[in-house]
Image 1 (tube, rainbow, N blue to C red):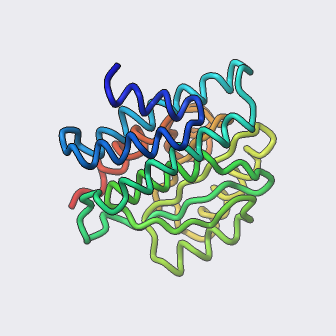
Image 2: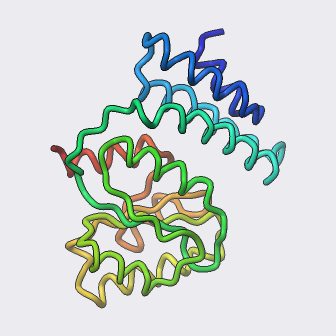
Length: 210
């Protein structure tokens, strides 16, 4: 089993100690690019955790310990990630009103920052007006919304409508993710849908190249 497979397995099984040790090994040996370790190791493991959650083989406690393992490894990688000083764009990110599930949002935030984006995190259960305030205050180019639950899709609609009311729909790229939305819903509200963090970064990189 490769080191990338091992660190993915550590995340899947919520073994924070092993994930940290493997991350330290990767940093010390310098044979694996850290971005590759994150994408093809940590993120691969977290995607599997998501699949197990969808199959109802994993529940919230398993997700939490898996995320803890991921964060332990990320903390080891962070000082060594070679992100350039100049931010590509400013991203406002948050979980919409009515939803408190923020693991996915936190992972996306870490990846976006590592990819060179400035990320303003509004947290979870965020009112639509707060997103608008933060966009204006930070002159943000991107708004990233997340929700895990179908009932809170209405909150995404509310944010999209407020963007239009404020004349921001053509100035701010709206991207959405999480378990509840899909491509069809995104098109209906004038947003772009991303299934995972890799597709989110590819989507943004197409618009915000240094």
